[in-house]
Length: 408
Ligand SMILES: *Cc1c(COP(=O)(O)O)cnc(C)c1O
Image (cartoon, rainbow, N blue to C red; front, side, top):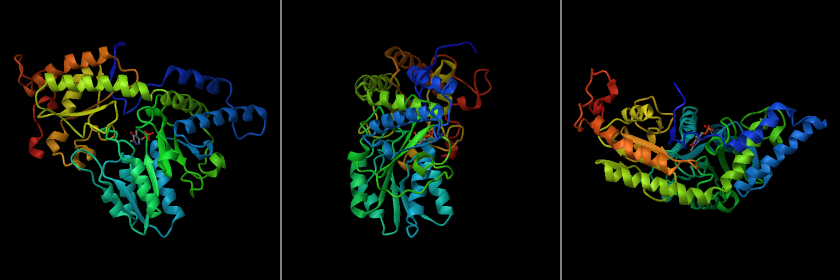
């Protein structure tokens, strides 16, 4: 395939590595490849850059650098937080999380259940909002940790983290938040909000995949998930991924400076995209509340059309978007997030998530808004041109209007 234009509307799945980040990383791939734990200067010099990156990531979170532990990804950070809470409090065998978490928490929660722990998946309402009183009521004397995401990756719904942290503090329960979707979009004050632990993933903020961090509030007891060397003050074994940590640091600084842009320019583009789609295409509904929501995310159901069919057509014209989360794409299961919101399977399966980024342009939104109406019309079989019928050359199985309605 030739280099054609990519219209990227999937920034909640991953983001482009910023050129500044690539540049900052290159010296540590080419020349400064020493081990930061080594005693000689060739290694020790590298350690200084790891320390500088740690300061930058800490600044993004209004945290102390000593509160930052670098990990391999957001998934590891989430797993490590819950794992530590259970290991440091052996008498406590109950975990609370939400029904709309990333699969990192959902799968780990299911695993813990199989291991004999008790896990509560706290529900959300039809708008995707969490009921903090239900979370509070679910807390028991044997609750080891409450882990609730800062913002949902599918709907963009922002959760009341400060209130949740306050509830947990008053009950003496650890509180962790998966803040992977928050940097650059909302202001993140780990200390001010009173969370005990917080997860980030660099590839959601214009740095490479495979690097993340866990904020661990000072004086929080912690048991490592990955055990080995004394790296990260004994909180995460394994030689530091120096180039990626350096890149993460640069990206963290950029994210801190981008919040205003995201909440003005990106938000305006997202709102224009939604307004135009609602105006030009009938039978479209938003999944989740309008607010409080991340400024870049729009989750819409194009009723009576399969999302997979829409995505296939969009892919043909270079538009990247997703249905549900990337992790559930490819399976016919409707998104667990939309299901938890009480959205019936046919509507959930017609949901497409558009997630904009700092680099999204008005022209790109214009292109999408121009192309989408005819795609939906064609898939619904309501256009003047020949409908897409099974058996015709262009059609694949999933291009039929409502192929799986029987399964609903
Ligand atoms: C992407 C994502 C993760 C997983 O992060 P990885 O670094 O890919 O493991 C966790 N939580 C949320 C909300 C995410 O969007």
